[in-house]
Picture 1: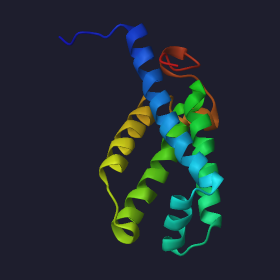
Picture 2: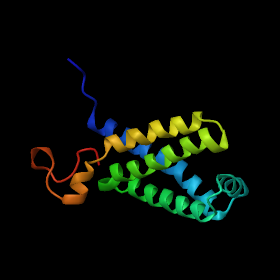
Picture 3: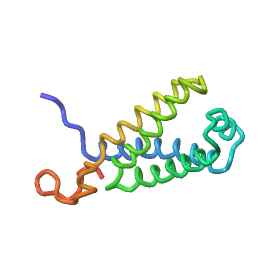
Length: 138
């Protein structure tokens, strides 16, 4: 029989995980939106224009907000996972950079997405298991 984890410890662990992911993506969004030279160079190499840097930074910032709002953490995690996939692919095919930090961030973000409430509940409303209206971990 598996030992159960104290709900307080579980909730704290998930919030720490959300905070780590939020800090990482907030820093990335800030660099993109501020026009940091490294970011400008990376997006120049991609050849899609600087508009993509701004849009990506804005999406990252929105994803951070969604991750930190208890009822939308899964949706935010999924948005940020899409960013991770894009970064991973551009690092493989265009930028030829280090993939380790992208893989670690992807894993942490996937855990955030997995721990949040179902996206269908966010979109269509309704109650969760046992007639509850919110996830026990929020």
